[in-house]
Length: 412
Image 1 (cartoon, rainbow, N blue to C red):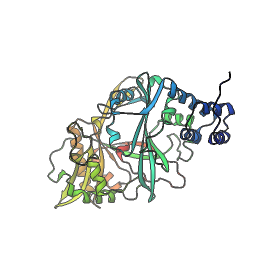
Image 2: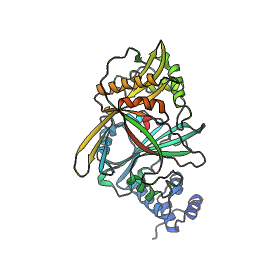
Image 3: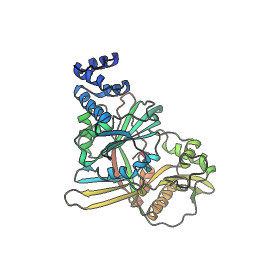
Image 4: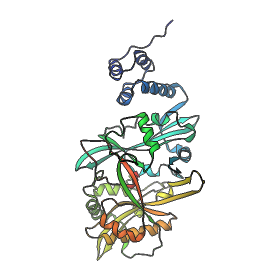
């Protein structure tokens, strides 16, 4: 007796007609009981060949060897292992991101995060993360989603898993909708560009292009070498009563930059409280909190403030030359929530030098400082002998161009 397949819904019929899916494929999708919401996510991007691939993955998820889900705290060791075995290949180098002992540390600093994983035979084989943010672009309020942390285990590449893990459903906190997605790529990372073009040929259509480099808007940071330094009597930890001044300094410093979220006292307080009201549990291990944020006073007035995220405590980069096998592991501190009074570049330089000294005390190699649109400060920081790093931001909204992107190192 012939298998009885469920009838095609009106939505599936319309989608199949619009996307050019053959009738048999549409019938198989109906038989697999693909939900309407999943169907819509396929329909945004997928032609017939892509729908065949998505259906195969759907069947593997429902009754086969793959499990797609949100990462849990019990996945810590498995997630670190995935990252340790998923290097990027850029030019002559292989770059491995080491996320241990706490692979969730960076994601805890971000807003509205979902971290999706693919599991096969009790091993994590792929992951991706999304963070939904409210920011300003050209002075206009806009909700955006930052795509990051896409990794596939090196033994499981060329199987389409990277394409599939990014199509897994988002958690409710991220799925409230957004105007666009943006991403940041390493310079010369043509492998990821070619990957995107394979699975989504239109991915870079509205992104600025330049010969010899990946598509995108250039963004820059400086790696200030960790250095020796003594005590500075004008620098102290931030106190709750300092927050209004700190908020004013931060907003003044980054005003007019795209992707910047203007601070409020409540926002900065929540950041330094790590989202807690009241005492933290005894087992809690802070990533970035009140002791990490400092102010600099001159003549009894706060003129600069900044936070030091000890990024290297849980996140490091191992660079290996593919031909010689020579390796170097780089660990950093990162400058967060920083600002200074108009004309107080010397004070900000002084505070950055102090944080570079704290970075050395913690055993890190350098302090990462986002420096775009701060020409006067950049000139002063030359005495600290910074090393520049350039990456590229993909932004695809033609009717709302992102031209002066703010770099928040939580999302680096």
